[in-house]
Length: 314
Ligand SMILES: [Zn+2]
Picture 1 (tube, rainbow, N blue to C red):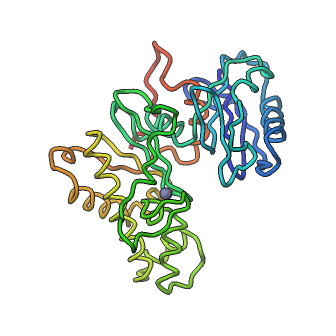
Picture 2 (cartoon, rainbow, N blue to C red):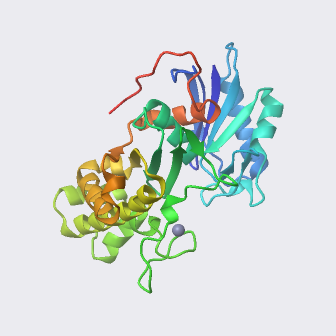
């Protein structure tokens, strides 16, 4: 069995679960996100000790909602989790010292990509991309049957590919201009709708509901998001020759509004040879995603020999 830790900006959880994804026990608490690295560390240790029971554990998987260097077990400060500091905190080594277990951590987008690949909408592929289209746009790439981390674990920042250039390109929270995230994240879609005169509740979900009800401004903002998402995915398709692209969060809640226009935009911008048979599908794990991401941070593939899982194939 595995001890999983899901570290989030607002809430964190620790859980004991089987290697096949069945959760035995789970505790969760609000994250003291601004309390500093040592306080955050003590909080996570507390959660882990609280959830630990008589089971024999083989290791700890941490899915961190913050930039992470998986090879070196470091987490770095993020806007919603500033406590880790810019130099990085050796979370894996510190947890291993206290819990006396091997620890592997991954950035949550990479860990969720692994979870969707192993248990969800990415099952059966060798080359897939996972994009979460939520507060930000995070992504993880599975290439040739393994997670692609790149030189320092920072690869796959699809949300910050430039999809608009020139003076009209929108500023992005990362400091660049024209990034996909500046057009297609939940807050960006909301802001664009507001700039065009929409006066409803400031949330991505509210924009989606209004678009479904026929509001022309919200429909326009989502259509623009889909257009740019398709452009970003076309770059991925041309570069990586993928089998499947799995889209999470906004693309799951608004699949009826987004998936078809995303695919049209993608097909208009990439060669047919690279888009034929390329599936663009919503993520399948729903609220199990975080738990399974923590598992997959430690156990990215099923232990062999093992019965195949059937966790939510589309
Ligand atoms: Zn950016």
